[in-house]
Amino acid sequence: MRELPFPFRIAFLTHEPFYPPSGGGSAEAVYLVEELVRRGHEVHVFCPQIAEPDAVEDEFQIHLHPFTTWAMGRYARFRNFKYLLYPFFLQRLVIRAANIAKFDLLLSQHAISAVAAGRLKSRLQVPVVMNFPDLLTGFMETWPAWLAPRPFVEALKRYEISMPARYDVDGVLAISDTLADYFAGRSYPREKILPIYYGYAAEHFPFRPREAGNGRPPVVVMHGSLDFHHLGDIAFEAIQQVVQVRPETVFRFVGQRTAALGKFLGRARQGVSGFKFEAPGFVPYAEVAKYLADATVGIVPYEESAGTHCAFVAKVVEYVASGLPTVCTPLQSIRRYFQADPMVRFAEFNGADFGKKIISWLDESPLAWQVQAGKSAARVQTELDWRPLCSRAVDFVEGVFARSRN
Figure (tube, rainbow, N blue to C red):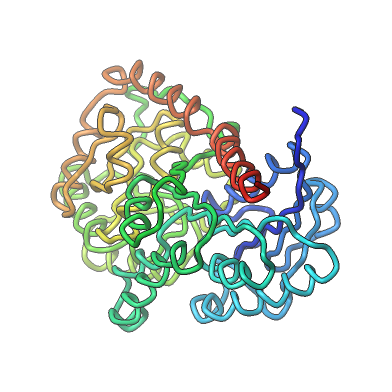
């Protein structure tokens, strides 16, 4: 470990349980905190209550400050309502802790905790860095209107994009160049933004060569939180197209049996004759690769929205790392990075073209692309593993703190 001229005390704020991570999105927090601790900083994590907090504190050498007023998590009941209230309770939790131990910097993870961090900046008189692994409210553009009324969503989105400038924060980590453009468009200085992209845990997604002619039905896989913006008309129409041409195909949905997934599977069972699927339910992040190992094609059929265009989707990275051919809608951030990568085929924002792209992969022997698959996997392992990404992020955070001392 290198010697630091200025180890400091950090309040790390998040709306997700810190450990174990519930998916690719929440995994980033673990690696950021590990890198901060490795460099000698004292990290206080403010998060919803988790199991075995004492063991987690010992393992990661951190101080946990659990939020216990109600259960939090991406699959908790009344999740969206709780998210709206959480920042104000989180703010009080940080203030109470700051009365005992003065913090030198606040680092927020996601937009929800950024609300608390922004409001605390003037109260605590410390530098604030906001980390945005997505444009959270942008995803809601494609949710059903009864769940996310459009005027309400637009107001939330404007507020989220305005937060760095509104609270005059000292630095912003953005998941993509596209999201950085949004913040800069709201008068936040571009030089204070570092796009870090979105990584994956390379140790959990090893490269596996694909077999040619193994005699098993092809498997089209999708994993993640399986929300409404994941499973819309594009995914449904693509399945119709694939089943019509390749009726033996099995569709595998790896993730929590959400309301969106349940509705989608019901629609597909009724509307697609011969639809075959697997839905194993929630799988811990470290075990997801087992469900990719025997798959044929990975898919990312996101509906178009500001949120999806800003997202640097972890699914694509994990598919490519595993050696899995991929079909994705033309999301701006992902396309910027993977546009020249032969292992990712971008479909138009419609199910017919998405289905054709899936079929094009199914019709090809792995022998045609196996060498390229290895090269693509090596590239993402070098460039997008969490550890080098988080090292760059912590360099940025340390720079913000150093400038605040001058």
